[in-house]
Image (cartoon, rainbow, N blue to C red; front, top):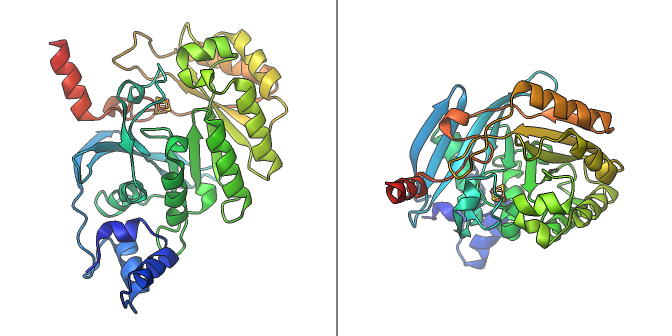
Length: 343
Ligand code: SF4
């Protein structure tokens, strides 16, 4: 019998090699791994003891809480979208850490601090449960859930290799996106991995949110380690190495990041880099008094970005009622603790 995590933590080749290294004769290794990945069970694999502790639904958006073996919980979100060609797709937003150490002030996860990194198996378990417990037909994956993926680089990269394995999850690299807070070391490592082959069409998104380091360091402490110029240089290296155009994420917060003048600064800094700006209307969180922007504010800012010469797109607001929208992920156990402290 094999442990479920041994399957989840390996590509098919890796699973075969792992068994060989253990001296385990496993002529049926391919059947075991493929069976567990594609049907959810196999008679020779111990059942995964994790459980989906909760599912919250807002329209077609579903957020589920996965309780791991040590009791740690992560949140993952299933987001229905329509692709450019009009075909429906279902994006799974996965977590890479329990909590997050980056402390972005507009994000509920940032208030949790980081408890620990997720293993490759724990990242894959989110896909496995979404597919075989929640019965979702996942077509796309984004690393935009709890945690900074570059802060757990090795496990995230290996998870991407498992997710793209054609014998198992078979999610093409072009359907996988990694979103970072601007972790330059991680961007460079991802650039090397992308350029080395197999992951050429991977998507990269960077959370920008501010026109300059002064404003940004108030929102994103990472700015003290890597400036916006450092981030822009890393993105140029990504493009020079053959990476796809980058997504620049901009959380639009009324009175904080919505000044149309910021758009020109953004254009001046990133205008030479193939990119698209993704405007994300702020989703309210308990720790901040900020509200969501109204339509006029969104339209005005997007027009200013376009005027500055950048492609701009609005991210659809999905899952807000289930506290599953961008920046709202914080596990129920933390929420309960906070509620108790507040009473
Ligand atoms: S936005 Fe991302 S990097 Fe920043 S605190 Fe939230 S989860 Fe962490």
